[in-house]
Length: 250
Image 1 (cartoon, rainbow, N blue to C red):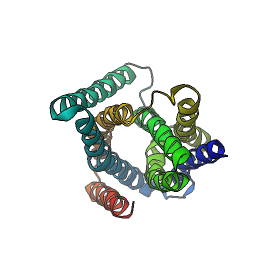
Image 2 (tube, rainbow, N blue to C red; image 1 turned 90 degrees about the horizontal axis):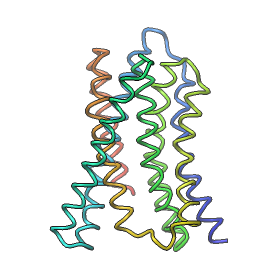
Image 3 (tube, helix red, strand yellow; image 1 turned 30 degrees about the horizontal axis):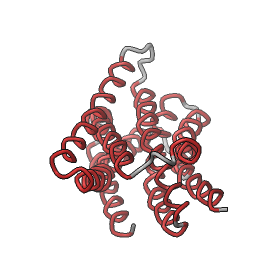
Image 4 (cartoon, one colour; image 1 turned 60 degrees about the vertical axis):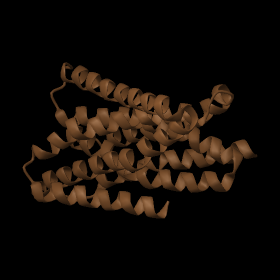
């Protein structure tokens, strides 16, 4: 029963990403579409940077320093973070060489890849926590679900407005969310003997490097392209307030 409960908790946390994709069903007048895209991009980049700076990086670095002492712990943290930066730069350059010239679509795919990598270790963490203590796992799942919803917006909005396909937007968002229970299943079948706090911390630092670089170098310039600074600032502000609320409550 413990295994089923842990898997269920992880699945619910992961699939909460799809809730964010439901914003594409809201009806907007044509003149308001660019305002909504600008707001959504700014909102999602604030979430990505906020999660990385307030959660992934400090907590993961602390765990590594605690286990490897300050020298090795800090070096390991920096290396994992830099590898994430290098990977997203490589993927971005690769997508720029692709045939598609739709920047929004590229952005949606990059967001999806980054958040799959983010959700995978989260699935492992949620499953392992729930397996040991179901109450702790539920608390962790609530916190994860809380920031998975805006992450779903980050994937669905650019893909929908690039392709005009709700199905593609939802399926790409679903693919990101499924990474969480898949991470949980793999943790149980193959990795339960090897998973520890240090390994998860290295992966999350790697993901932090990906998300910060993606937010600054890809999402922010795209949001600026629409020249709607009022909605850009509003999205950043609400995203940051949500991060603060998440930190206080969870």
